[in-house]
Image (tube, rainbow, N blue to C red):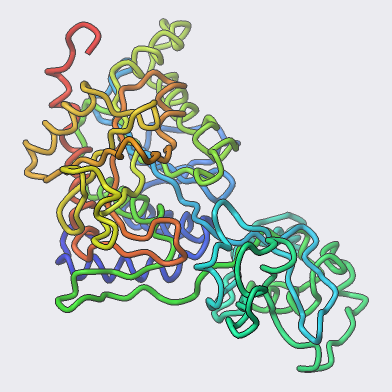
Length: 469
């Protein structure tokens, strides 16, 4: 798959992924397809797990978090777990539970709330699409399912006020009344009232009937079967390779589908040590604190480890499962992977000297004060040793004393389990903008770094098994 491609082919495959992964739900669905193609078996949390017929599995939660794991042939309870943790969510607009709004001056509007730092000035005058998931009733099977939807054209825009108007065109702006997307004109056509059949949907009256009809069309379900919606607004412009010598990728939603994509590709490509349990953990909701069941403060990773430990134990010692789980965590290592800040040449002085990550160079290791990241001397030494032995380059990011560092999900997972952990990520420009910039070769470099981590960490870690190291 990915590891047999040139760097340019890998970049193009990533861009195709990004074009088709506007939401966390779509990203998880595409990654699940990659797991399926690589021979992984999907497990479901509600079921009893049979771990005897395969050694490669994946599990989803909420449709927005996905984790793959490989159980080494010689792994036993107490042996460690190698894990890379990323997040699937990105800044976006979230459609409100009741999004219908009264028209204003002939415009139809959509009630949307900013998710994390979305709807800043860089979101204005952008072509915004809509997608997400619908909860639908299948009358034929008498069951309720989740259905992905992605309208393939822009449906909304947040228009700026021209500077000719003077003071009203200057910030601050009210996020509730002056940042509302327009989605159409009341005069564009006569909207037909909901039919008696459509009124069977509890969403009628809460969302524009025109919007529901568009969603139903592209999800290929009747309006009447829609029970609930979870929808996002996002930039529709496709990623492109740019720069005089094709050095860059200009792309939406880089944070952090970039590390998510490369971590999964590296995981699938790795030659896993048969003594290890390896996991790639792609969480949701990092951008808003990870405090959900599908976020890093949820227990999906821990559930996987506990179920694998219990399944791998002889019945005579099953009552010691908790002790073996603790030992497993103590022997484990976590890479919390989230994008890092590449140096911006127009603001070079904002970066700390000798700590200015470059594009197309290698993985950025993040060391921040005040426990913003998990990196320490032990974890840095281990990850740098892995990089040296596998011929991967690394660089270091640290902030100036007069700036602040952003947090990652690693601290939640490390503090909940006691795993040693390091923070790392692929560098990008314009973090938290609607559209970022990354190095075109960093897809291949990131995939290789994660592949070699999974292949090598257990062997290298054998030299770290002394005392409290």
